[in-house]
Image 1: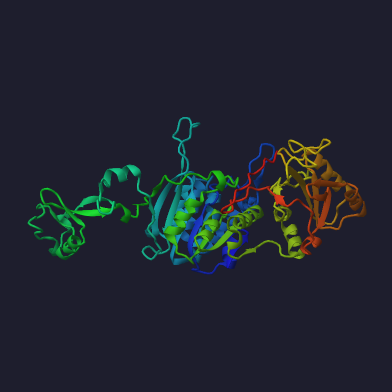
Image 2: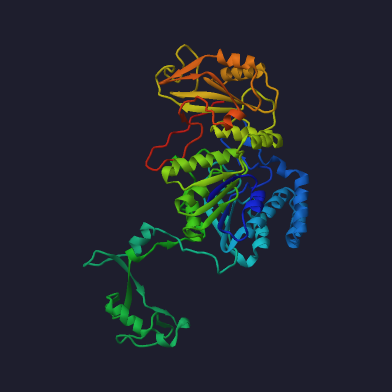
Length: 550
């Protein structure tokens, strides 16, 4: 079954993916150790950087990983990293962490499999040395240059950086799955080369030489044809029986001097074989863009998947981000495994797949997220920030901290809901009649979420949420807690009143315990959550993302 894993791909691969079980691996990892793994939805007033991988880059973990590489008897890799520790200390932590993960990916890849590593020029030269040692230099297939944008106008004293790099390796060169991919012929090439039109059929064609260099001649390619013999340095392309077959099929056209030429039809040309410089796939824009800064265009992944796998094969992405790889794999009828360390990414991917494929989506499983109250409490004990992010993303809520360790300001997440514009309680501009602004967009109401772990919660926590609601112009407030609320808290919530939206009456404040959540108790919230940009449902128009203005 197709599977989404929440977790570090190193652990997920080791614990869940058997040897030689994957046909194609594509990864687009972070490019250096100073940039944390997932960055979401930059905002001027809030740093929304996800620090889910923050502890991985600690000195202890780096040294432990280096020691593990030594234990695995990967001596050349170990000594290469020791060298980088001295000559490229800025790259050393990143390369150490990536080495272990690439080794695991090599393990799970089939003998017929291919591995694609997507990176930018800041780390590509280092990463290639790692991949050469893991896969073997003889299994290096391509360095693909992908031109993601056309120009950069704001650069000074250097050329504009407009491309990324993709390294392609085979597990065992010569055995890998390879399907030649083509792109349409350029119009200028067609007009120049396919100048003839067949009167009987209207088909366009060109004429090509039927001779070849003498160096490639075999005994059967040296003969006289219709009184014509090739020049001394040339031979016929085909043996005589093949020439006769072409003649009988009407595919040989003779010049005024009797020189034979082969007729090649435009509609028989599959297109131009894709070279290793890709300039025809632009960066993600328009309806496909989900607001994810490192999002890659789906066409890029479709090209890779079509070239290096077949229907029914398994595709794996160890750094799934917003899920472009699994989306492309699903659409091309491949099985897939997606892994990401961020709960926000997992939530985004789930929504993207459901929005894109609807009832046609194949069943998939999500692993690594809490499945009951006890496992959720264990997550809180291990990593309170990850627990917070997980619970918020279950409601498709924009986390305002994304795991950062800082002072609690009474609000952990913001959600936005679409309601019918210009109806009570909204007037023009999304304002409640009577004064309070619930959002900067017409017909939008905002909800503030607060998450509390531990056993000690008090009325002042509700007061802090109310204050945050006013500050951030939120019409609704939700308090999520592991512990049971006190009576004064429940009294405050009960006295907070209701908000009316067209057809519904919603409590202004609500509280939900972890126990009730796993008993499937539901919050009363507007139907249309537009917090994150939704992938376009085929055949339907996609709702634009609203500004958070936090």
